[in-house]
Amino acid sequence: MQSRASLFGGLALLIAAAVAAPLLPEWVVSLSTIAFANALVVLGLVVLWRVGLVSFGQALYYCVGAYVVALTGRWIGFTDAIALVLLGGIIAGLVAAGIGFLLARYREIFFAMLSLALSMILYGVLVKTESLGSTDGFSIATPTFLGYAPHGKALGLTLYWLTLAVDAIAALLVGLYFRSVAGALAAPIRDNEIRVEFLGVSVSGIIHTKVVIAGILGGLGGALAAMSIGHVDPAMAYWTTSGGFVFVTVLAGSGYVAAAFIGSLVFEAVRSFAVDVMPQLWQMTLGSVLLLTILFLPEGLGSLVSRFRRRPAVKL
Image 1: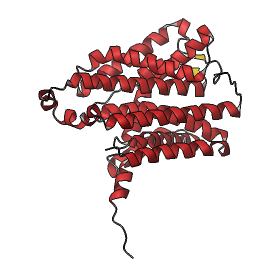
Image 2 (image 1 turned 135 degrees about the horizontal axis):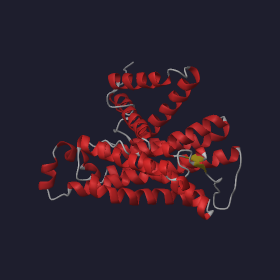
Image 3 (image 1 turned 90 degrees about the vertical axis):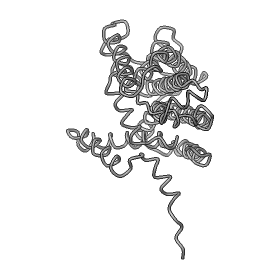
Image 4 (image 1 turned 45 degrees about the horizontal axis):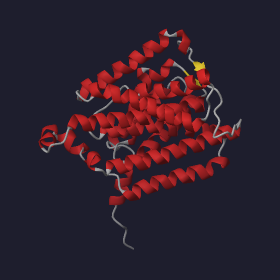
């Protein structure tokens, strides 16, 4: 389970990453921004995974958050990044709240496939709607930050710091949620829902809450990723996008909140390296990494922390 030491350790790593940013190349900052934005979606999947549910439709909320940022800037001309990120998370959370009444009734493969179907419906709507850019999508207006309008490298750094700040707050809140009664009931619900229901707890209500939390995190991640990329398109709602998030979740594991951010960063780094070195075989490289992780770290990268803690001290 998530401990306070691991939580504050993860926050310390985020602070260190923020301090080191001005010393890093621009491409590293850009890659890290996208990785840490996507990590929020992965964190939402971890919330669901702990209760035994896997969603293949998290790209729906990711895409909603991204399009909220793009359309608000395009139609209204509002470009404040902080407000847009919050708006993207809120709208995605409202969508998840509505969908959650349906999803909370299903389990296992039915939950996964229904979430995938809803995401693909959004994809189909976006592809067929010319006013939303159809298959090409459209660019996003350059964001501002409480009246500050950076450009070039300064813009990349500011987006990076904003992403880290949102990550830190999300990690802290999710860590607190995992230590709450509702969060602690995840394992009992996964093992035996009926027993939990006999305790007077609404399992569907708890799962609905988790769907909403995952939706908010997905919207926040989509909003940040959209501003970092500077463009949105229907592919953000496509099933391969959701599959990538599930890939990272398996890679990271569900034992620690910090694992979601580490796993996302490792995934983006490996993918970028594989595309650059082996452009024709990068999918095989990612598949090999996942296979090795499943074989040697079945509980994900987060299990390395617990393994290190259980290692006996060496007596001299």
